[in-house]
Length: 375
Image 1: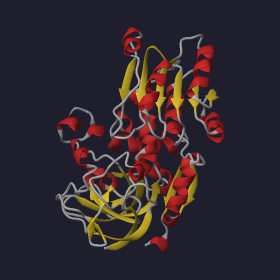
Image 2: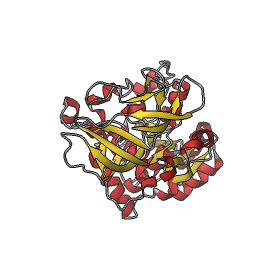
Image 3: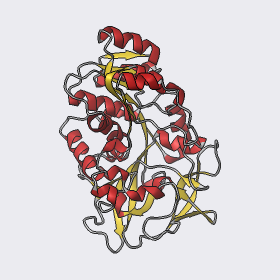
Image 4: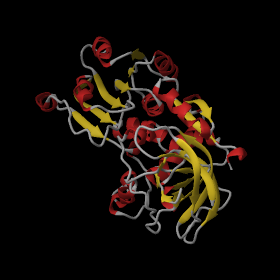
């Protein structure tokens, strides 16, 4: 079918809304009418080259929700009319990683940047006669998509699409970083660096896990104010102000758990994050840096002598097919505030405005909301 999508044709160029052609679902694939897509910082990394796809053009978007319109042979448990969220990492449930309980590290993820469909190894999207590389084999910056069943998670139909889309990446990643990877326990002092969509979800995870003091670091005053509304106890404009403040509040013990959720991770900052972390504490690196950045500033002696842990995590360290419905059930029960995380809604044609707002610190999370006019 012919539809439209937001593409980039080379690095450091604006998103371009153009006609694309999407193939019909084959075995194990699902066709979805998209209703909403989150605008995650990771898609901006496509523009800068921090996340290099296998080629151009690239169809962006990896955080979305919609309605199933058609299923291919071999798809069970999903049918037309179902409301679904797209998991940005597929989760097959059968590979060695999934069998070991690491469904966020499913082996199908090896092909996420290559552009070729899980189902048959072909390129399922074309534009101007060229194969298109969809972000994480999804491409939610389009009103329609055809994806492998392992990326499709059925959800409660009562959940609004504009909040449901957030758990396809940002909320599940941030919340899981706090409650799973960092394993925050009641009474822990926690520092969160950066409070966009992922950081604000990590903040809510820390609150629900029973953290005592929650220190938030963000250069944008409006975001710091929002963090206080979401449950932060102390806020600071930069890491150096935070070091003094955290030391004063904790009598020099520092934060038991530090969660790094900045827009772009820089290797030169890692040692500062560990300096904010207590003896025997854990610093969880949720933020992603450029795949080309291999230089890290780190005091190795202090890492050893203070017995600190530096831990990476992806997708919150959990199981997307379990965590996505679970987090939405918490939202429905009033235990997770997703409504206030959606700062602004945009049309697909306003995508560049949305990313400008994100980069200038005006959004916790901006979303693209599709309407009949986009079909």
